Image (tube, rainbow, N blue to C red; front, side, top):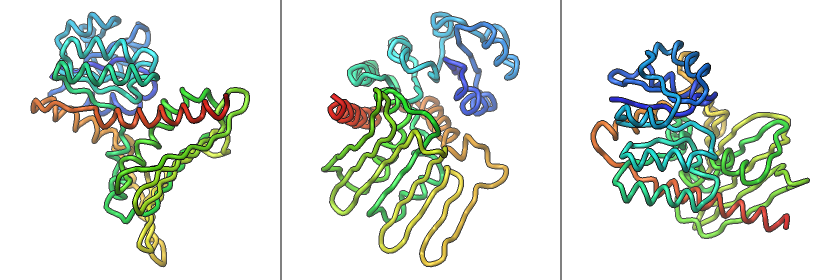
Length: 301
């Protein structure tokens, strides 16, 4: 199976390439416009020169079976369009695009061409989070905080807060009928954001503070007088009277802990078996993010 990786930045090198490079039957092709980066990464993975590409044209000409897109978000629409038009099943790191019209167009194009389009919402596959899906979920609270990183609202919401939005959507036990947004914006930069989703018998809160003094991610689901807490995707704590702690094994790879390995393998398995993956559900997460962006913009207008 010929698999292309477009964009060789931090997330590709740390999370995706280690998974792809060791898969039996995968012929890995790399593409970036920076020759020095291309050669350095390729040498480390023992990718031969004939599978190194500095242009998308060259990569597509290699007759790919699948592609992973880890280029900057601004160029996602152009790259993903080219791949889908070439009939290449495509996995793209979130988000599909910064603008909802571009995201909707890519989803429609994939459906029109009958080509898989998957979005990298890896937390749906993270073991600690999947274990929360079988726990009572009357109240869901997710915090994803940063240190000293206030940012322009659209970029922050679509590049980072989207993980919170998608995780809440994945875990809510019913239909969402109420959406509330609170935010603090100063000098055009988003400092913190709170999203509340509610439905029959449940409330879900998503919080991001970009000036929290701590880089952390904490998920809590509770109901029926029990609570399950996941700390930094690694430590699961069950609360029913005395807490019970389950920690990530010493030899569990980070990519597996964060659900990236499982997402990659699920995508490759679909490609191998000819199953076409839909990105309609992922588009719903993008649509909710757009609703959050507009709510923040209205508050600061």
